[in-house]
Length: 358
Image (cartoon, rainbow, N blue to C red):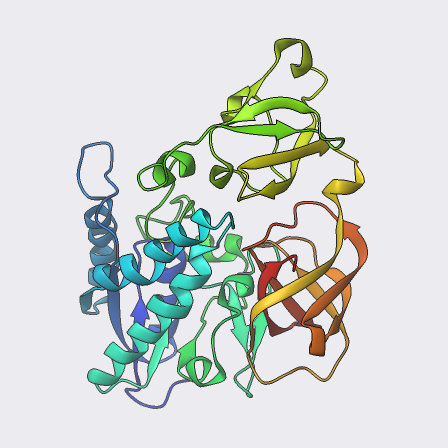
């Protein structure tokens, strides 16, 4: 239980997870102050209204129900500079970045902690499915199917020290049941999808605002031309190829190539190299890490579990720290430069880095 009247600033998005997080903390005896972050105003709902206004109304309804204040913080300028600009820059380099990880690292956690301190509050809380231990290390959630430690691997121990993760020991089903029991209007609200704060968008159309289409060749494993694409930047390694993905494939070849995937990209030449599903070009066993971040110092262990996508399989691996290299026990497909590889020892999230091939 919280010490009497200990204050906590809770990030409330209007979703069920953060709403239940606020409820649980209030029940534990904390003095809860809600915090809504306005980070993006370009996404509109069906009525043409900025989507964030609708989300804030829901957060306000929950705050009123809980009898807590709701503050609104405008981080849109910082979000566009630190997250969106970087995302476009990375895609122009032919990488596939993860804006949600950058958002947590540069916007959500540091700025919320900063605002809390201004208010004389030492703790913040979020509705992430993750846990921490007494050493302020990050642990995977009880609900492995919802675990979000992958998105938080760039946090520091000093930041984690100021954080509470109230729903880390609950399953999503349990969270929804708690919300329903307390008559929260968002108890069955769908989980957020798409880019952090921007929402679900057609990524290709979104990128085309700043990255113009540029016709290029699609080659097979032997170097033969099998089709054309409209810009190497729009495609990621492991992605299916075909007409519905903006690629032109000769009609006679479409059936044969229906289970082919992007295996490599030559950014300078604007060329995509594709291969059939089980072709060796699609598989990778060794991964180089760039921009490596360890939550609590370099790990002493060599054997770890690696994850290359959110709630992806935990893969046995070993790390060579001096070479910043991760060697998977078995080669896998869909390893895309720019994405994150996050490493674990048991339940503990050690940290990770950006996937690179060189």
